[in-house]
Image (cartoon, rainbow, N blue to C red; front, side, top):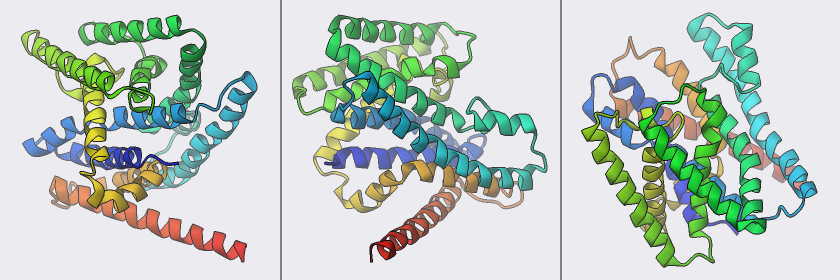
Length: 323
């Protein structure tokens, strides 16, 4: 059975992601756009949080064979939509930039570079491997599971102070794993008191790092604490996830249940559709004066229209096959 609150969170994260990508083009001259762009960076932690919950609530992997079957199903679901998206994106990229190198195409295909947003696809692939390992440790070796969490927190804290000159794509899975693990806090067998205690602790960590960042003149923009993620953005993400989940459980977002559930159900394809539209329409921004909120509304609106149209056609084809 689907968790309505998780659907709401994933829908909110998807809208926040589009807001981040559209407001980015205006952060140089609009303080409101800069503020929204920065504080909407909870989107990725929330995606990982939701992905972790969906995996942990099922817990169907008991053997290596189960793990193999899971990967055979999971990887095509992640890669095939991405490869289809690339066909459209490359056409738009060529039309906008009038250049397209073999290296750019190749790196995009194998998810190691090229298209800017492929890092999130790679992260989801990495999590497809990591989450079963985390669950195995929790079930079979609770001590190692706890050691992993402690080391993860300590290293995430360390990279808040020390910059590691390492390709973030090679290590991001390790730190984003914390956001995935934190989704266990909303599983049915977890006591609310523990969840609340972790939420308070995360808030204290976030405030403490924020104050230290001010004292040490540390860059406190979330984007510069995101690649790879350190404890500053991870704690912020956890606060946002648990806080919004608390509100969702109490029906605060029920009036948005319809649209957010639709967005949640198609979040992965919406991710690709919006980015294709973004690259195309952003090429006109130097010729057409738009505000950040009009640009956001344009991209979000067209994305949902395209997704809704495609979804309805697909449903109609399936219904025709049934009869």
